[in-house]
Image (cartoon, rainbow, N blue to C red; front, top):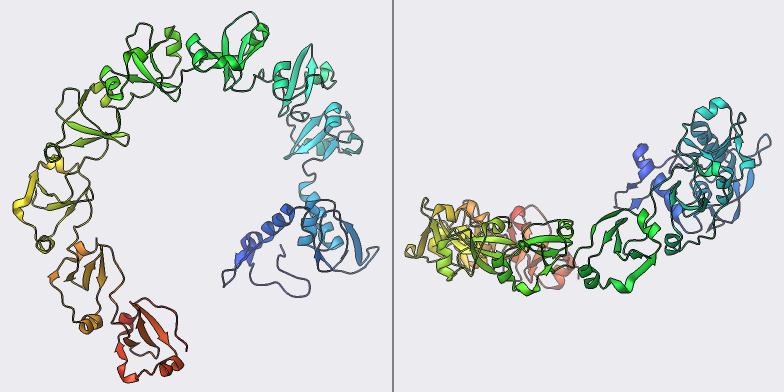
Length: 581
């Protein structure tokens, strides 16, 4: 593609191969460079275009610039030619290849050779005189009136042979611009995506179109176009006929009927518009307008009660109504079963947040919280003094989402009746305790509670329990101190320098669950050097900072005070900025 291949020098090495030529690349320092496609798009997208650099300035649409030919002047071709940049595409093309004859002329020559006619080209067949426009590899017939409203000059159409014409598959007829209005047999139509849709004057006016501005068209021409569906008023329009007093709401292209209750509840009277009954009759109708969210409704026989939510009716039961604080007198009886049947039914309503309940006659206890029912074991219920406030019907409660079980209180020691592992409840999770950690925490087995394995398995589990604060311990590999929720590594040098020794030995498996902190640093002011290296560091505010020779001397340090430790150990400590003076 010749990107980054200037005339005066050879090609650069940042854009090797098709992908990098097209999409760009990143250099060794992380700088991003555009490729051919992105560079062209940037030039095209720049307001007024981004043309070639001329005299140190970027040219733009409307400029006339003098551009040279790389081959110089020859056989009727000038060495330099004037080019007027007519649009942003031209600006982008000349910025990419700032040459005329053997640059952009070649582009045009290859493009027309490979693709022949680009989108928007108007061609005509000498055989019948019909005009077509090329769109995405197809030819679409252009009627004279369409050419007029789209400002297409048919006199400049390119005449093509029948064979060349047949190379382009015949597509749909090329329509006038969207919102073009025509009249046929006293019926108004408006064009959308090349399809003529029947439309009333009311709808045209509502869409801010002028019904009087009809385009003259012959019946022969009009009938060539596909007829679409009748255009309805915009969604949210409230309508009624002149004689028929039934009110409707336009929603998703259909008319939904208002009942007397919903018309009042939605305060639709202030939005009501009257149109001819004949126009009301042509629009598709489906269902009823739903009551507002939070409305309690029941069928005419008063056998079923529902709560409206997002235009769905959620089944309610007497106990659930009591829980939610609803009163029977607040329930609205809809006029017809047809109205209530038109409202989609949803899942059963759910109780108030933090409701303790049982359901279906079972003794299982639950808490409804965060949109789910959480089981509560007998042990937890007794420990937390929880009793149910409601007993719901199994038909609805069984459909509520399942949540995780409510855990015992934090700090509770518990085990299964079928296993020996002891857990401690921490932040609502059961965390297994190893024997050494049990001892470290000074816990007593007499405080361990036993619960049925089936109940224990429903509880959320976490990683191994952590030791007490400021516990010094070893694992099979390392020495640590546990502080503020993390384990901090203590290297051999630091342990010796600070006189630290372990009090416990924990398993690597347990310790791997505990978060890692930064290693414990050497004492403040310690001079360190890695074995086999020359850089000297000083510990300042727990951070290692390297010292230049100048800084070392100016601070009066003595090399006999430098502690040499393994490089691997030195590299464990965090580094700060170097001290140079």
